[in-house]
Image 1: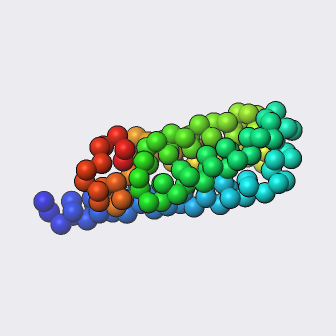
Image 2: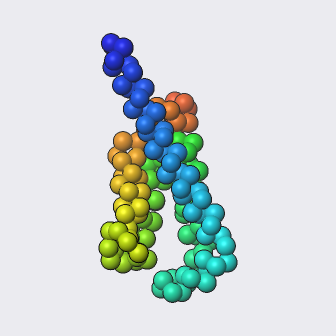
Length: 138
């Protein structure tokens, strides 16, 4: 391999680690904020029971952590994709892309999670370091 090919592969892995980390941090922060009692009070306005507070918070917090460390990245990204589809269509109603109630950030997070689902976590991940994990668990 030439040095350009090696540098390109390393750069790809760093980019995937950065993408996973950015999405992971966003979802950890959003998941932690959903443990506040104010979120449970807003759930009935969205058509969801207040008891869904903890499952929704955990559905954002746990995949965020798993994305950062690079284990179960594809499964975590698929769960995040489902959450983002729910946010786009159920919570915001997909009314506009920009402005108040816009879904631009949601679309970016959805697209990024789909990339992780398809490509995987990259070589800079715990799943890659543990060679015995099956590829489907990366």
